[in-house]
Length: 130
Image (cartoon, rainbow, N blue to C red; front, top):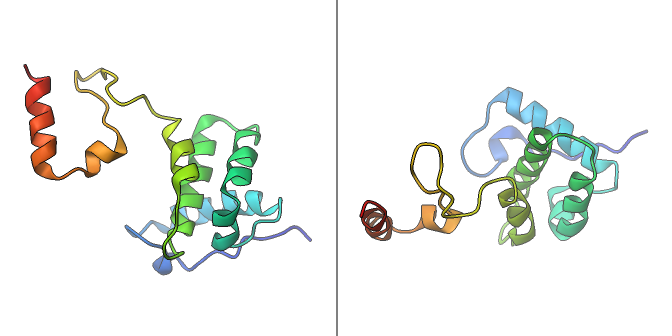
């Protein structure tokens, strides 16, 4: 019998509540990862490099890979004190480099810039309008 991921309940997931359809989609992707033996959020967290390697080699398109890594990040959020650096770095690889000029004329910001206090963000936008 194939391995199944031990999915936390939807309401137990950290952060913004996700739709039932998103929850089901995440569970499908996590069951694919469970095929290599990681069936709990704690195991995903403990084996981040192996999880990223599996996703990269999954033979799926980038949208599915983003869904897979998003699902992993959502469920490992239930583990207190999680260091998610490897997983977040992989997710960031799907997006433009910070400072890249976008079609709308704005510059792509890093996660750190987006999370910066409002006063720092305001000073950054003042510089870009000069």
